[in-house]
Image (cartoon, rainbow, N blue to C red; front, side, top):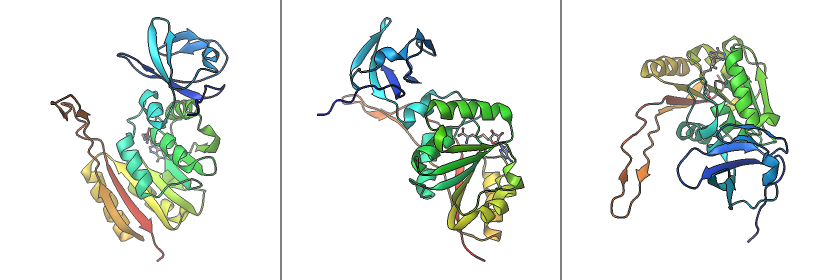
Length: 258
Ligand code: SAH
């Protein structure tokens, strides 16, 4: 078995051995304030094996490389985020993969952007249109913290007014009035490219689908994903009492030629 060790600039997660929140950060060798940990120099972790248990202060943590779920569960939230159950589905239906070129509107807290950037990888490109500087700042911080800013471009523009990128594989909209951007998305997509729009109400879905049906999108489908976690106990396994009953609906369509 090969034991991987922590290197400088790794993104790591500390998962408390007993109760508590996971802590995600980049390993630099600079003393800094790390939320949940206090003032600490992460450089002390360089060379520690992943999968080991480390003691920091009075607490014991499992030391692991941070994954996408860790980043999503520890990001700073400003706007309502698209949860992984929905973003995973968007990525799959839109066939977003290494090398894909994607435009997104808007950034919000950057949760969807983090998933898109992970899927497109270093050879792909995600460009996000955003109108509000306060969201841009929070989103940018979260994306940078996840170590994904290298394949990302932020444009401080209204996406309904036009998309400058062309021949895109996908356009993903999480804005209140996505129907206003359907024509610009159509012009920016390659033929066969996918448009996906995430909205929280069915009224928005109806208006959006009407617009898509009137245009040149086919294979239009709207999906709601419900996810329920199980509490597993010997002889007493059951669904958790709390379930997130409502997030949003995702509508997808594929561009065809007139
Ligand atoms: N998908 C994000 C949340 C987006 S919240 C996440 O998972 O974290 C919606 C964002 O869209 C807000 O930041 C808002 O400022 C931005 N927005 C709304 N209308 C827009 C438009 N016409 N063009 C660009 N951005 C827009």
